[in-house]
Image 1 (spheres, rainbow, N blue to C red):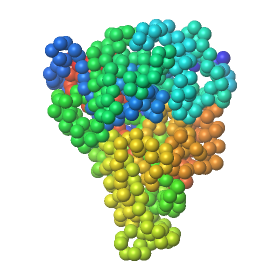
Image 2 (cartoon, rainbow, N blue to C red):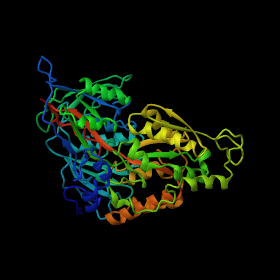
Image 3 (cartoon, rainbow, N blue to C red):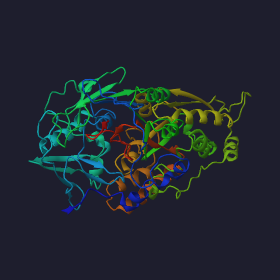
Length: 544
């Protein structure tokens, strides 16, 4: 057996050093983005009034454009919020450089030479919020629940057995899994007590190990209240209660912070964040992220013609979008993996569809996309009208701006775009079903600290989120090799090969790489923005 000290380091030293180096344009524009590999807090001198009520309860209200659809962590991406809201924890977790360390397990986990047998020691001092001690047997049951009652487990790995002996957990996988600790840090694998009645878990939430417990969930408004876990295993919990209020209306989030209705807001619009940074009543906590804002192009409709996809890609001025529309707070996209992780090819790979508006128009002319009826928009070579629906959600502030800019700009190319706004979950559902022509989504490409899971889920043939019809034997072959490769540099090279295929096949628009932020009142502490984008609050979250 070979021992992995202090967590898996499969992202290599390059990534830990260079993670945030790609955010220079945002930093140059005056944002609070850190350049040293961890989230930076912009501290201001003035404090605002105490938010505790007269009975002494210490509470916070946080506004967010992102939230869960249920409280069951194995459904969709709802596990993200079990972790974000401080209710649940995973076996491992990401540090700010995307390296992995133990959370509910010790750091001294081991793996067999063939990367199929992983052995973990479950911490001996952890209890669930109901007081039950965390054992390897309960961890085993929680992991099995992901595969039995959710749908996304096989995206990450397939196990042949999970065995428990006291606090020792052994996971044997069907195929080599060289980055299994990375995958177990994904919130899908948040550890919950499945020995309790879970009949109403969607509404009541799981029993987990974090500093807070679910208190209430309004299915209609998506408002979530969490309260202090009185049995928290890792020290005192500073707050009694946190209320998370959901709205995808960016102006509501901004005004709620200004009026005092919110003590903190996740992901304030790039048009407003600088005004908060200049005001001593607030602080801005920001970080680079593993996110890329995608523009998926559905190959099951008109965009099945690569010529049309190529023309669209070549006509979009992403640099201007980021500099002007996004206020210099985003980095223009060119590769799938963010500029924050340049080891994966940013600035190195060849983009055959780089900005070339004249070339884009000539491409369509030559292919027979002409304005036959004189209405200013082109028809297909067969004379069919083109009207591409572009779906998006407003929970990420850049998306409406990017979609509307694309609509306006492509009018100049003679391509009609019709935007459609939906709530976040509806857009996710439509992406999976293929009910769109174009789809704008901000996605954490490094959700496991490594691009493999994203490449598999969104671009492999039959991938969970590949409802847009892309299929490439060469791409799938590279992924199959990547999934069993443990050498860091070899993994990086394979990812770059896969990215280059996606570029050559004109598969997706990579609009930009967002900078994540929290804006809080100056008297709030312990609210965090991290590159992994999972860990919002903790036992240390407090208000003066």
